[in-house]
View (cartoon, rainbow, N blue to C red):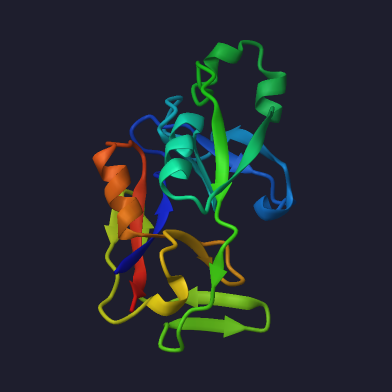
Amino acid sequence: MKIYNITSYAGKDSFAILRPSNKQNIKEVDVLDVWWDDWCSGGDKIGDFVFCYAINVCKNSIFKLLKENFKELKSVELRYNKTDKELNAKNIKRLKWLPKEAIPLTAFFSPISFDCLPQSTIIRSERGIEEIIGVADLRGDVIIPREQGKGLFFSSNVIGDFDFFTLTNSGFLLCTERVKEFCKNQNYENVIFLEMGEII
């Protein structure tokens, strides 16, 4: 079974994007500080999933459905902060990247983590994982496909029936094909699945 990194587009199709605090770890806080970001924003539209760099964010209603179908997820409340541009704006309506409507969003992660198998193509250093070779990558609007035989490999005996998990000592939220199919059947917008490897 293939595994994927679940993410969102940045700066495409008029979707707004968030910037998270670089001083918080999503797994260690009850509330995550975020800012609406103008740097890569495509506009002011809030998608079903919202790009927030290494943090996964979606609408509350979608998180509830994911949680009902895939139990191993935790949510983290978002606290919206104002950027200097917002604080100093004479007319806030002229800031084109700010969403015009307030839609409840939540950050989410899996507290479950597993080690990958030795054949995984990872470069490590004393600081941790430096690079995962051969996995799918998003460059602009183009998905560069995973290279055959490369990426992350996990034992099916270890993963069991978990559909969301992370690689030990990494922030990558990984999911199975079941999650991808579920999201596809729900027609969620602004969600991308980058192939990272396999469960064998």
